[in-house]
Length: 433
Image (tube, rainbow, N blue to C red; front, side):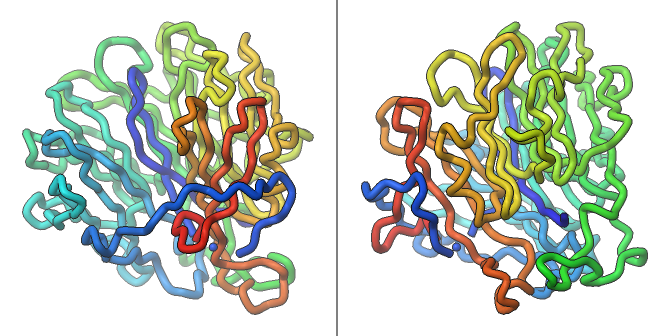
């Protein structure tokens, strides 16, 4: 079936990472729902000066690329102690290489943001997808890597001023890139880069609205289109990177439709392992051997498919130790009709899909999950879970399919016994919209 994108940005020490995020609104099923109201989250974007809307193709979404994008990152780019925002924008099919302009907002420290994009010369070009922030040159400030439909961008931070260096650093990538993650995979003291790529998109070869979903004409993709190979770049320590995908044994014979990607030390041996959530294709888990090379353990680890061995549309991805056993667990969001999957880390390189046991499966079935993350929303010491939902086919809204284009976000409270409760939003709450 045709599926879509997810990616976010963040930073985790000692392994720094990303995933891309989309959000958006419908009604919630009763299974696993608590009557306890969620804490009130209030949308202050307009008040804070965050007013520009995202653009990504036409409203009809006749091509798969028009349903992708929306990356954003909190990053203290000017090292003043508060978090600023870099926001990735899309483009249009007539001139995708031009782009509609990314934005950099500086945090003024008192609840408002100022647009400093022009002053910092970081509006970029092309159809932006996602962003990851990391100090790749070890100079103490955060650099920015933006994935794109065409050439990716790398902004080198030189003390609060940026220079775009993707081509000279050899990380522009000639594919449609989605998710990306930094980590020191070879333990040489600098951050390397993994880039997940999606499909080889050639518009002239694709019929608009050339596929069917629930009897409705929708865009083609990713199924029916060729997947694009992912890339691992080694940081050479001199401002450049080299493609080590084949050497590191990450050149997969069947490229997936890559979306979310994260590094984490899944087996607690001190090095960075790698997980890639693939859309409508098996997910990848690569175990770091400690010598800079990887072993594909997707199947033996039990993380390539769902709990019943079914293929799912991997989109958003998050690592988090939700049961406080000192092992990172894995959560992956999926398409409507496919439950989101919680993989419990059993140790020894094995994971158990526990979505149904954790009461996370049924509540996700009506929705298309994108960005996701673990965080302690109620400060009770355990990790809760947020999922940003939203469909990819606007045609379904009035087609009597029982599906909705706009869908609610979901906040799941960790009850401390291996299960989660879907919290009902309060009146006036913005998080569930």
